[in-house]
Amino acid sequence: MKITANGIGVSYTVDGPAGAPVVTLSHSLATTSAMWEPQVKALTTRYRVLRYDTRGHGGSDAPAGAYTLDQLAEDARQLLAALGIARTHWVGLSMGGMIGQTLALKAPDLFASLVLCDTSSRVPAEARPLWAERITTAETNGMEPLVEATIGRWFTQPFREARADVVNPVRAMIRATPPRGYVGCCQAISQLDLTDRLSAIRIPTLVVVGEEDQGTPVAASRTIQEQIKGAELVRPQVRGTFVKSRAARGLHARPHRVPRESRLTGSGPGGILWSDQLTAEPAAHRPRRRAWQR
Image (cartoon, rainbow, N blue to C red; front, side, top):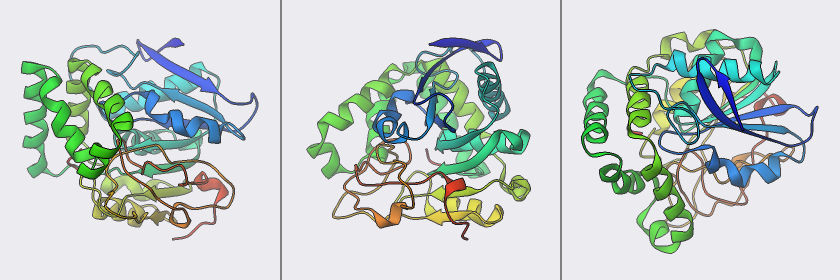
């Protein structure tokens, strides 16, 4: 389905029982809302699940020009308003976590809880040339030169070799990303600077990061956790040679379970481990406890 929000057409899908609490899933750079497919079946047993394609991605419009995180957050706010959603749990991976932080600062009353997966709150000045290089590549040569470099960051070599059934669809998502949408979002991410404002967030927050994440390291998530009062940091351990990079196949809602209690089996794109066993309860239903290279 598609609806107009903040002046663009936004593609979205809603699943789950009407009247149930809403969970909004916000994907990472160069993917689409399809990355959340493995979560939907588990989440819709007790939640109404909204997935949407970020501006510049998937079925949403991809206007030319630089985007900003405020703009991406406003897209989401207006989407929620257009759908009559007054309150939601938010699960954001990488860029989706950046959008979640931005929107939580702008409109905290929208949030029942905030789950920030493999994301960051600041891009340091020394990292901006890396983003400029990616922008130039996409503008000049399209997405193809970015595909394998991105896959190499997101998946370990053993996983790439063993699970082509998982990796190839992600390649297709990266390849199909509109270059101007990718460029616009890269420009937004490159200006990320929220760390010093995060103490204003008073929403129940869970921060999840893979122990060996190359894209947004543990230190970036620890900074977020330290800045948001009462936030919990979870660092899943990985069995064998499969290292967490940027996937989202294992964020499943099940009462009273936390990621570190689950058996982990692999890694992939977007922010959470690829594992049918990894589970997480939205933060409002859990006890309150205490990267830039995307």
